[in-house]
Length: 407
Image 1 (cartoon, rainbow, N blue to C red):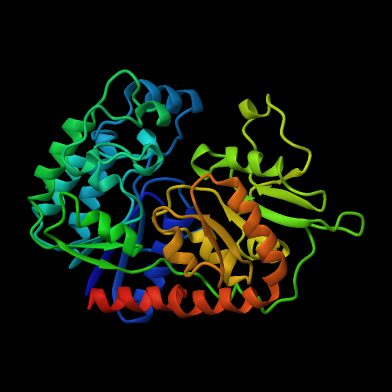
Image 2: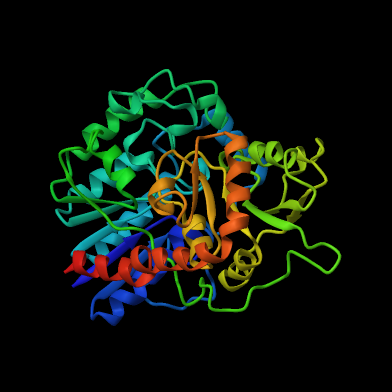
């Protein structure tokens, strides 16, 4: 059986790594696996069945930004790239087409979505589509929770998030995109939607795809790397600085960096925040509290696991998570998590008090209270955290579920 994986990335980022894992797991299970991607060519791979369909030369940063701001939010981009992708799919002639993220890195990484959907619908193949965010069911956004919008349920238009995303600020394409998507999806006869959380499944069941088969397969964590079995790493502390470490990840607005700053101003003298990620230059104009430290972005899972283990608690300030891989990874390393009571975060953390605490979105006083509680219970939570991940979000569970779905 031929199974084709389609994603913007391969072996890069969370979705690219999932696609790579599925590719090799399928081969182990006797399947004839193929993959197509179009961003960040991996020239070290000489796999005959993995096809890069992107551009040889990358666009300049200014070109990407101008396209994003002035022409963003449409469904049709990179037509030649899309024709190349379809041509490769036809040559492979797969039995199953497994879609992942098709929108890539904003407009630069997107494809001619109407042409792509019409083309694969006409092939009459079994199509599986894993939703890693909300883009497939909205008029333009990846997640609507930032502005608590529900227009995606009945047609979008007058998008309240367009200026927040700074995407296509001069024209709102959300309504016509929503209508177009609805018509395109009607062309696909055999479609199974896979969501990465029960929360996302509940959202899809209220969407234009509510009448399709919808199942949940959680993203997987490699517990051979992310675990608490290794001795705790002290890289975030020193003999002179043994403060309690609150770990945060990312300086993007979507990661809730403003809440890091609010929290830092309220911490006690023996507590500090460590943020993983390079702070954008334009944000360096404004100062940050002295009890916030930054470390560079980390691409190595092994090194990231060491950072999780070195932290005393992970604070996920993002209000919009369709799964929350960093939450699950931190827990696997025995690090309790504080997250908001929105989207999929409570589903991953579980019952408040066992693996961390779930607090009201943006309530810094409750975050502080949770930190104090964790300082009392940290050792007990360590084992709860790993056990929850091993039982629910282990990578093997994810891979086994997909193999069952293919067969």
